[in-house]
View 1 (cartoon, rainbow, N blue to C red):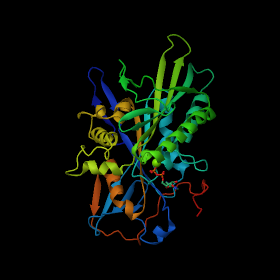
View 2: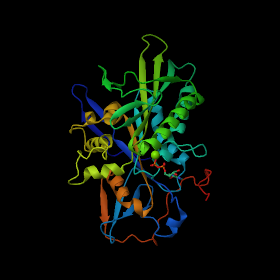
View 3: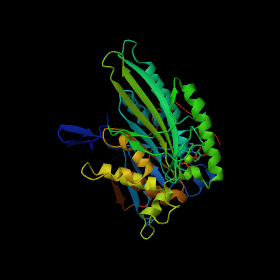
Length: 376
Ligand code: ADP
Ligand code: MG
């Protein structure tokens, strides 16, 4: 199986060696939304195998850009496959007192919400992960020495304000750090849940709030980060009754098309409104994590990265799902999203031709054909 070859070992003062994990990156290409577009220009990006993809170089059509990632999910990939291969493996850690986070990154319209939330016919990462956390906890042996409790919070970061989605009338909430370096938000609703239907009872109406607000407030949902926290606390039954807390953050990020402007010469952060500070800082944090432990990681520069400080990098288990779209109109933003997430890219002097369409990695293709996928 794949081992992260970039897992680094660094010395931590006085404590010997500590394993530093990095951010795993999966790319997911969604299918064409309009059959007409598919017949016209065709895709501007395609998979080569289960880790590599190529895209038209919009600067020079005689070149393609090739990228390498931990995983590439082709357009045929089902919700279940994304969950099983990329998300499920990290969930056991949060039942053992460790932190994990899953982000959906990419331009608006490329499939972030589909990947995280999905719909009732094609449930996404969030419902599947929450269901699996309950499975893991319920499967614990009766003679296990621990008792478990599960709680949830749901918040939105919009214009650098932290808003409680479980208590919609609340104001901007502060982010704090306790003496053990745990990040917390005093005043944020944290609701105990004892089953998946319990979770839905709180989560579904909170999402409706968010959607309603978005139509009123200038596409708010594409500019805000929706952050779901699932917290698993386990307590030893016997003395000394040790307690461990594991946090899982499931994040539907703001559209990355805002981000490219921040990278351009001349247009700087002062062009407020248009720029999403948290997303911009997230890209700096991911860069710092990629380049090793010696650089300062700028967690404190934005609300999102501050909140995720104890669940991103370090010993946490992080997964970035980069959502991309096949249409040419997305090409520029797709390259931006891939550059954000890739360690390296290769420029190949070969035109992007439609004839050499590679076979996409369709695992267990017949096992799950989700409703709607073959329709229209
Ligand atoms: P984003 O949240 O990134 O703006 P959405 O998740 O809303 O994008 O996706 C845009 C549209 O594409 C939606 O209609 C969604 O249902 C559809 N879509 C996205 N990804 C897929 C996919 N993998 N399979 C089928 N439809 C998808
Ligand atoms: Mg969305």
